[in-house]
Amino acid sequence: MKVLVIGSGTIGTSVSQELADKGVDVEIYDAKYLGYGATSRSLSVFSVQQRDRRLVKLALESVELAKELDRRLKEEANFPIGIFGERCPHVSVAFTERDYEILRDYSEVWRSEGIDVKDVSPGEVKEELLPWVDENSFYRALVTYDDYKAFTFPFTLGRVGLMRMKGGKVYKYREIKDFDTGGGRIKAAVMEDGHKADADVFVVAGGAKSREIAKKLDDPVKPIRVTTAGGFCTEPYKYLFKPVITVESKGYRLTQTLRNEFAAVVYDMGIDNPSYDIEESLRLLERIATVTVKLFPSFAYINVLRQWGAYLDYTDDGLPIVGWSRKYENLYYIYGFNNYGFSIGTAVAARAAVEIADGRRDQFLEDFRPYRE
Amino acid sequence: MSEKKLHPAIICRCLDRTQEDMIGAFHMMIDFLGIDGADINAFRRFSWGTTGFCQGRGCLALMQRIYVNEMRKLDVRISPDELKYKARSPAQPVPLGIFAKNNLEEV
Ligand SMILES: Cc1cc2nc3c(=O)[nH]c(=O)nc-3n(C[C@H](O)[C@H](O)[C@H](O)COP(=O)(O)OP(=O)(O)OC[C@H]3O[C@@H](n4cnc5c(N)ncnc54)[C@H](O)[C@@H]3O)c2cc1C
Image 1 (spheres, rainbow over the protein chains, first blue to last red):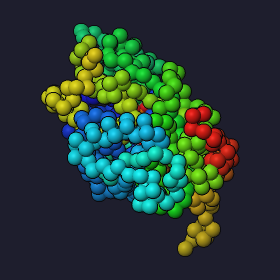
Image 2 (cartoon, helix red, strand yellow; image 1 turned 135 degrees about the vertical axis):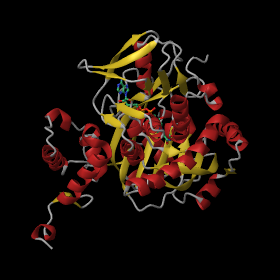
Image 3 (tube, chains in turn red, brown; image 1 turned 180 degrees about the vertical axis):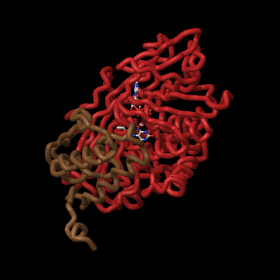
Image 4 (cartoon, each protein chain N blue to C red; image 1 turned 90 degrees about the horizontal axis):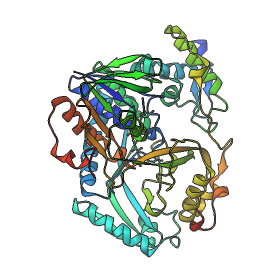
């Protein structure tokens, strides 16, 4: 069986590597360089702080799979660095009582999957986790202890290496522009220069741009909202800042990365991004800087080295889009990963690979089908 | 030890990487991604060149040259288009506080 995967983000590379492991002949095509989309702009925290029980379950499953991937990359592929960091506390900050009430509701979801959640005062946060924090700057916080930091590029590119060891192929700068179809099937993917690639199965893992592909095929899948996101990173500092900080009300997240830089992102500016813009913007930088300095006044002196823009694919029910097309029997969709593609992508991709390669349906994925209301 | 190793050509001053380090990273990239998957962005990511304090201001041209030369040894000709690399703002490191507003409501 030959599978053509469109997109080399964390989702496309994960599905491809899982398929190659099953002996499937895989080819990845990306319109840009490998990992171009949301993946290379991500903070890539594996977080159990999800808004839905099913997602929390998938997040826990992803952590176990990622640890195994980390081991394989070192042992089988001689990958010189780890791709997965240590377990770290995740502090979700509420600036107001209202933010706190919303967070408390989410935390019931986390608890229902057995996650340990601590409800703490600003003073306790300062004493136990974050000596840099201004304890007068926020109302309360909820802390979990089951998150992990991943190493964004090695995580994605390492998977490509494993896939290639099993005979998989990957092509950069090859945008899929069109398709040859017939008899309710996709026959070939067509590139800009007219080059055609055939396969038995076509997998759409194009992140936010997947909606353009579905549109091209006139396939009435569930719509997504594409929003503006982005981030910045600072110069590296000694690794002392272990926790991940999230301010859900501002779509904001900060941590010190495995490269020792501080990286902060806004994963949802609440602004649509119909043209998939990745330009950096002052507005985004101002939001990140304001929230950061509010919480950690001494960070005002840290130098920003680089900032970037991004786009992200959100669904209205907060669940991803995973499953076979109804219009073309050999077309499979896997996108719409909101702000949690790293957190749950590993587990979803592994499950999707079983559906694609073995033809079995995974009950757990039934709620994520592309045509749900 | 050869003369070359005693006086290595430093490509990345920020992270102290020599030409040999960069060429090693280039080959690791090719091993992992293959020629069809490799590009200047992947080279930056495998070698960490252009990702330090200078953000490429000091090393980008050298990195591009190594990339083109090593690709040529593999019989691959690189067009200037393929060397595109987006320099991001700020143009030089800027303290975070400069961008911070007084009130959260403003952002
Ligand atoms: C600022 C920010 C912070 C984030 N933080 C976190 C976090 O802490 N934890 C977490 O779990 N998640 C986080 N995320 C979300 C996570 O990064 C995404 O959910 C994930 O990267 C999505 O991966 P993907 O493979 O679906 O899409 P993408 O990474 O967007 O990849 C899609 C790829 O498909 C290619 N493509 C599209 N159309 C075509 C075509 N027609 N032909 C060929 N190729 C095509 C694109 O070029 C692209 O490379 C964050 C995202 C952002 C932007």
